[in-house]
Length: 173
Image 1 (tube, rainbow, N blue to C red):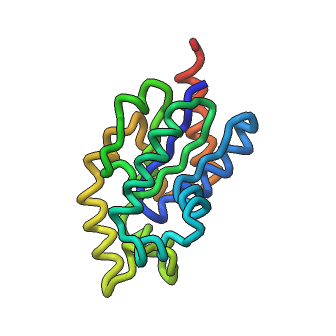
Image 2: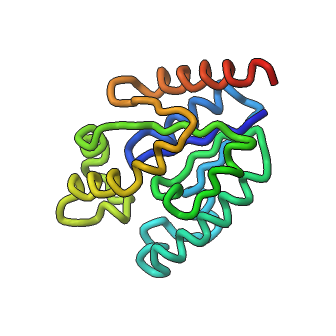
């Protein structure tokens, strides 16, 4: 069966929704891209950015995603910046459905307040930075197969909505 790919800005709920989806689709493999990179490098995302730089991180991220796209039956939670890193939409859409978890900047900011594990948000004005990231990434996010507004629904309802769409899309396969 096709992969389920989750994308969106930090704080949109990709990781939490992916875990819920894993409960709904127990035969699928859960692939959290940032966690896989952390395990491979034996460093936190913050430390990778600090020591080796964002370019290094993005290179590893691209290679890992390309490898993941060679398989099916996965729930893939992308890092927020994955789609701006020469993401292969054509390859992904052959064996995956891509879901953009869309949330307003104000809501994302509230969810992320106090978080220290987001290297791109370590700045004087993280809310402004979120807005900049959204402006920069939204064009690619909108190339997703489905956009799920997650402003006013919880993680479980988001997962159920994705399950319903996914099953409808795969009914004839």
